[in-house]
Image (tube, rainbow, N blue to C red; front, side):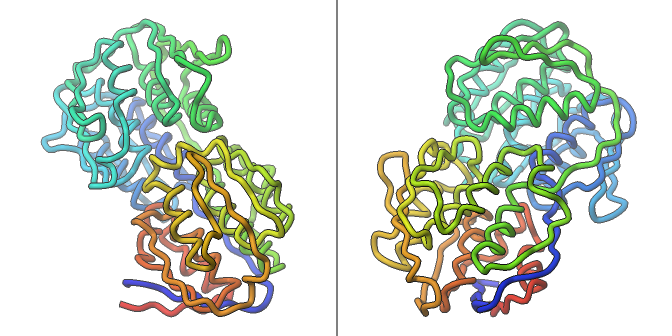
Amino acid sequence: MRSVEIVPPRRPLVGRAAPPGSKSITNRALLLAGLAHGESRLSGALKSDDTARMAEALIAMGVGIEEPDATTFLVRSSGRLRAPSQPLFLGNAGTATRFLTAAAALADGPVVVDGDVHMRRRPIAPLVEALRRLGVEAVAPTGCPPVTVLGRGRVGGGRVEIDAGLSSQYVSALLMLAARADGPVEVALTGADIGARGYVELTLAAMRAFGATAEPFGAGAWRVAPTGYRAAALHIEPDASAATYLWAAERLTGGHIDQGVEAEAFTQPDAAAHAVIAAWPHMPAVIDGSQMQDAVPTLAVMAAFNATPVRFVGVANLRVKECDRLRALATELPRLKPGLAIEQEDELVVSGDPALAGRRIPAEFQTYADHRMAMALSLVGLLIDGVVVLDPACTAKTWPEWWDVLRGLGVALRFRG
């Protein structure tokens, strides 16, 4: 479908809707299961474009993966990776690309990690440079994918420093590789800045579930023992980033959506957005999005209807997501009202106008092949008539059933081919 028009329900949204499994945890668990000897069972997992890319890449590297039902992966591995016969094409899956770039050092030959036109604009140079300092031969001529890694089946121990200002995924990639090193590895930040530190905690928790030992020391460093990984059974919690759309939908319409899990039960950093969403229409004047980056598009859409202006700070990393989300939000929200959202260097200011709700404003939103832009902007259609979201299928990256979920809550949708 080329587009979808959202018809405002003009009533509170009430019902049940379960978010899918966490993308972040699913892709970590798939990789660690592939690096472990034996059979692992991952239940509650996300099945989407991003996790399919990871699974397909692992299969190409000799890992056996079965999918007995809609939310389970069975992963069988010898613990060794073979060099694939062709480049690993990972679309625009950032987690899969960063994690597999590091893991490719354990393959038995050259591995090319590549992606689509969007992924080829997403930086990976800091990770490549850190791998070189561990003795891994890796090159990325443009500083973005494609990356070529000459795997030797092993990696040495030692200390490696990493600039994680652009992405915490660089740190997670190194930490997961480190447990398979020949000796202890110390992973240290070169500065205080790190994108969404909470995702490093997710990585450490996943590593522990597969038998690894990684301990923090100092303010920004971790010591990883060369334990390797053992097969495990792991239940994956729902995706907190996806939950933000449902929290927002119930708040914007005055409804109640039972997700089957309380906000406090999430371990993912984006769950911190729940408190901010609950404050609407009196959201804080300044919101630090640094530790809940994927929730920022949701919060920015809500801020468009807030009683007072909202400034989003700590969000420079949004420029290197699936698209430049700061620019995208500053371009799309003003389709409702000129100046509604503006960029100020690496910050976003949304002026807020509660009077927009209930009006008819024909607005055709571009989504930039970005699943989070599509789902966040669809929330506008709950309050404003005339909203059309282009390329609705891009939500398949992390939530293929998103539009079915909206319909299940009673929101009328008009798809156009």
